[in-house]
Amino acid sequence: MPPAAPSLRPLTIADYDPVRRLWEASEGVGLSESDSCEAITRYLARNPGLSQVALTPPGEIVGAVLCGHDGRRGYLHHLAVNRSHRGQGLGCKLVQECLRRLHTEGITKCNIFLFASNEAGRAFWVHEGWALRGDLLVLQHGTGGG
Image (tube, rainbow, N blue to C red; front, side):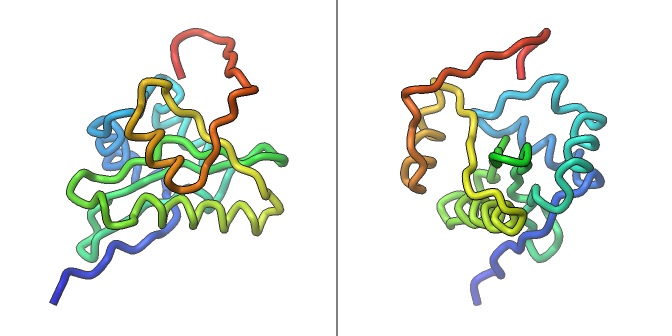
């Protein structure tokens, strides 16, 4: 019998340490002071129940994504799936759950930020039906990255 597929549930701040380790081990995820435990605590409080983790039946976190909105547009950040669980549709499942939850809050459009050098990430998002917006640039103010 094949192992049970990972299940999804909302990310909580109690998940911070294993999720942070997952992000750190995932190529294409850039972390900064904006990803401190305190900053993620604020983010989750502003966007309750939207961010998701994927867990194996024993409870190991093997996928995570931050999800939030500003009242008009949704945003996904730091989608990561453990290498041992890639290629099974888990990233797609995490994204679809986030989009479903955004839709229940009246948010019908969602954006992501992707490093221009992240070819694997770009291939994933394009495969999932996301379109590159060549008419937009990202500008940022503040110290440090992210």
